[in-house]
Amino acid sequence: MRNVILLVSFLLIFTSCKMERDTLTLENVEQAILAKERQALDRWSAGDPLGFAVNFADDATYFDDIAAHTRLDGLEEIKKHLDSLDGKIPAHNYEIVDPKVQVFGGVAILTLRYHGSTADGQPGPPWKATSVYNFINDDWRVVHAHWSLVKE
Image 1 (tube, rainbow, N blue to C red):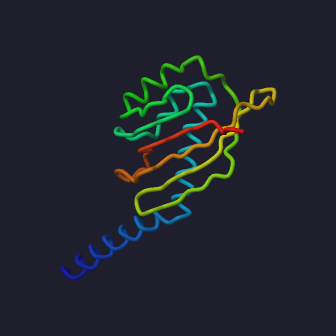
Image 2 (image 1 turned 90 degrees about the horizontal axis):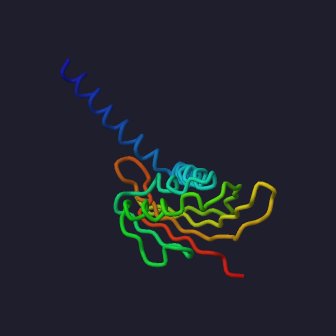
Image 3 (image 1 turned 120 degrees about the horizontal axis):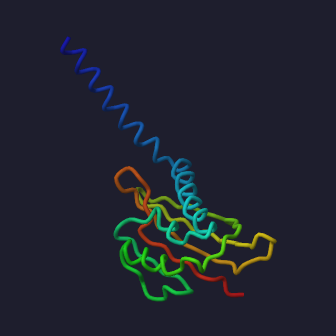
């Protein structure tokens, strides 16, 4: 009986380790990162700038070209900045263009272009963005993001 308990325990440990490795496959990470980014951008494009912070880690940093010219340190500072944009971001449509996820162990870097447009199809300014995700407590969290207007 003791051997059966040891065997079952070993199989449970082996299976849980294998499942953890499987969840971190490149394809799974890419899908998870893009889903998280879309979750945040869906809220942003609905006119909810504070919703953009949904995936940020507590110690995240952030820059952009519009109002956050100096680095914002920590989730509370980022939320304060995003909250100041409430009512200033009109609801709009968007497209993520040419996303690329690069994975380095428990860190993933997402680069993309963001093309927004009004409900009647008028294009907004194009953006390029980088979000650095870290695998923290079994979840991908943004630890740094940088958004810049595309200069033409």
